[in-house]
Amino acid sequence: MGLCQALAVGLPGGLLPTGKENNFPPLPHFLPLKPCFYQDFSDEIPVEHQVLVKRIYRLWMFYCTTLGVNLVACLAWWIAGGAGANFGLAMLWLVLFTPCSYVCWFRPAYKAFRADSSFNFMAFFFIFGAQFVLTVIQAIGFSGWGACGWLATIGFFGTSVGAAVVMLIPAIMFSLSAVVMAITIVKVHRIYRGAGGSLQKAQTEWSAGTWRNPPSREAQFNSFSGNSLPEYPTVPSYSTSGGQWP
Image (cartoon, rainbow, N blue to C red; front, side, top):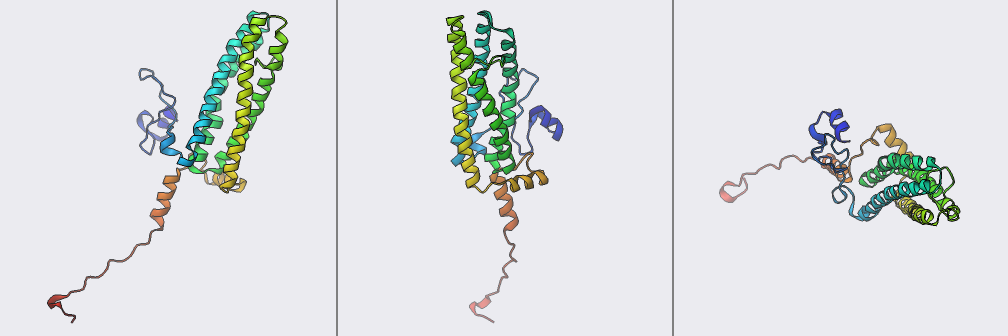
């Protein structure tokens, strides 16, 4: 990770041991902060999985946008007579889940497809599943949760139609996020099981410590090829002076 990783490995400017420089999140050069991650779908993700990983990334962006819209809707809810605690919680969800969802479930998915890592697949299923449950709760819209879901929106139409219409937008967006999350879990699980992933493999990666920064499939292939090629002795050179065998 950017500055932290640079300090950890003693490399300047967030440069990774592979020679690749961190590029996410993209930050202006005048800021003292540097990108924390290296992300390049075409460079690190196998071609057959690039579309799916990009969709998971767009899902993360859509969910973050939903949290931002929800903050505006909770402000309208508060102004029209709702509880101010919902606005405070909406701000907390936006500040907390925007970076945490990237680190906790998108990055595991990215690393899982990059290196066929069972441990990262398991981490993705566990954390992303919890995120899915939370998104369903946000879409429902229980009172006091800081989310403009269906229950909160429909119940507020009798108080303020204008505010309720604004609240309806994040309710729809939370619902769409939950549906896409459910589809994503099913698709990723099919790929995981089809590739022979298992809990035992995840435990092996944990014991070996490769889950922290699993090598890419290309690096694994190059390492395997380099160590497996046999070395043959030099072919002797036979003299054929005179054009005849001795």
